[in-house]
Amino acid sequence: MNGCLVCKSAVKGDELFCKECSKFALVSVRTCRYCGAFVPVPVDKRCRSCKGKTLYFDLIYSSFIYCGAVESAVSMMKYGKIRHYAEVMGDHLAKDVPECITEGRTVIFPPMRFLDKFKRSFNQAEIMAEKIAVRHGLKIDPGLIRKVKRTEPQASLSYEKRQINLRDAFRLTKSAENGKFVLVDDVCTTFSTINTISKLLKDNGAQSVTAVTFARTSRYFS
Ligand SMILES: [Zn+2]
Ligand SMILES: [Zn+2]
Image 1 (cartoon, rainbow, N blue to C red):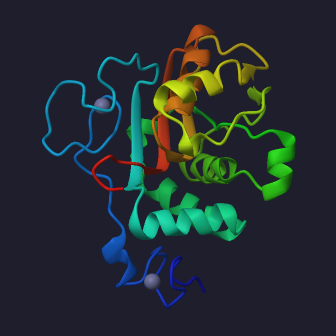
Image 2: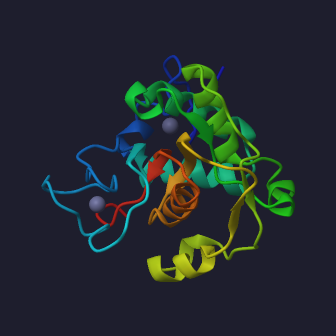
């Protein structure tokens, strides 16, 4: 029933892309063990993306690099407001993410402000989070985090500007004491959102936070 997310032609089983388009979909491999960014040469120290930055999440996993077919599909989902795309991406992500990242955790996601969600009609991170919760048999807590401040679209901002943009943007509605969380998002760019929410959780007593995203940007593929 589902066609290729980019060209709509037939796909095998539950694959996201047809044979041709999948040549332009890069699986996220050879990543920094700290921040999950692609690294050309694997080393056991901080990479160029996370060097000198304090990371508040414990592990991060992404299915794809954000470029080519994956970038096209995510753009269509967001700007074309195609809910179905978020669902099939979520199904893929839920199948793909290793159990060690999710096991025994409460699933959460970056919330959108009411008006922003209303405009798009869905929160793609929420849809992906639900898919992971169902497939991995986990509890989801959609109300734990609240977005309390309007933020500029992150895409055009530097890491430093993103940090300022996100300052005080989120609040917890209850205690995160001793909680173990898996934070799900569609795209991780500079990990500012994930890091901001992870800090908020850790500052409020969370024991550990892992992150899962459908796609991850890379300075090497953009
Ligand atoms: Zn295709
Ligand atoms: Zn790194």
